Image (cartoon, rainbow, N blue to C red; front, side):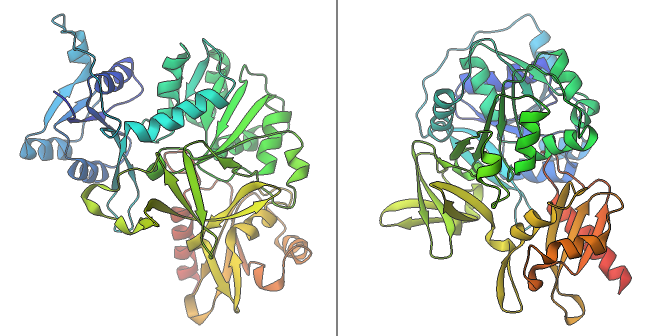
Amino acid sequence: MRNKRIALHTTKSFEAYCGIFSIFLSGNVWVPLNPTQPANRLKDMIKVAEPQMILTDCKIDEEILEHAAKEKIKVLNLQEIIGKNDHKEFELCDFNYDDIAYIMFTSGSTGVPKGVPVSHENYINFIKNAIEILPLGKYEVFFDYHDFAFDISVFYLFCVVLTESAFAPAISAQDKIWPIENIVKNKVSVWATVPSSISQIQSLSEKEKIETHIKLMFLCGEPLRLETLKYCYENLGIKHVFNFYGLTETGVENFYHECQQDDIKKYSNQGYVPIGKPLKGNSILVTKDKELLLSGCQITPGYLGGNGHEKFELIDGVRFFHTGDIVETYKDVVFCKGRMDSQVKIGGYRVELMDIEVNVRKFVGIRETVCFVDNSNSRTRIIAVLESKNIDKKALKLFLVKLLPHYMIPKIFYEFEILPRNNSGKLDRANIIKLCRQKIDSEN
């Protein structure tokens, strides 16, 4: 059996790791499914990916089983398979660079997840770069914090093997909320995660110095704030911090920046760490609207079913992907300045919501913020959602007057002690804005 799509509906079990590597080594296609996601969403993913088989190590929803039976998709229990004594050795196969290795899903504008097929060539270039750039030794312990369906999992799945290292998976809910116990107990030395995960630790232990064995922090998926970087150095004592940038459609990561302690002062006007410079094998083009376009061997074949084809464009014979991100070069490195869809016009002025968020977070006591534009009641106004407790909002406005032009100062501030996160640990912006819009509607 070759090039068959095999979905893994699994927790962080020994059997799950066996399943993943068996799929790769047998020349088939891995389709990760996160069991904690709603059954309807998982069913949508299965419809898009059309796997020939589903392997699971946990309870699977009846709705998914009914769909599998209808489509004649085999559903097998991984633990039962591995527990049998009649194992057969499969032959390791050669693969073509353009063979599909795995399928990851991103959210779709239609409400149906978009399947992104990733070839061996796409992810191998990234892994080669990671091994070359990062100070990885033999026998590291990688903290497997995020679920397999988050594409950063590709980083540790392959780097663990290539460095003869070990996994320390986050299994319990406690591991997600307070991962430090797992990190200390298992002597984790490498952690790949999103900056929000560090912010969460910081919110629970802001001043305490925490001793761990972590020597390398691989951060990605969100803008890396300078205060988060400072916390990594001063409170967690991490020697090597790297900031990466990339997308599922562009083979995991495409830019990197090796952080330094003086970045905190050097980029103080920016408020964020740069995404740095392109990894080898990646080329960039910046449009007149400052949108970042990427090309190179990491650009994936497109979306399953042909949806979203407009994001891929042939320019002078070269295939580019439109990231939708705005970038600027500052001091010879690239900064991501936010999404094109977060660029708004207020009173005729073009405004980057991310710039407002940087300045709002400078106020003492505000851990996170999300800004959006409200157009209800024929008004256009900026609203800031704060992760904080009992902030003096009048003092905050007076503080912002010194930092921002009047049209960029939020008109309303909503305060939450904890803001919602998604399964990857990132701020769930869509849900945060939805909750606030409901609040606005109830007030009108």
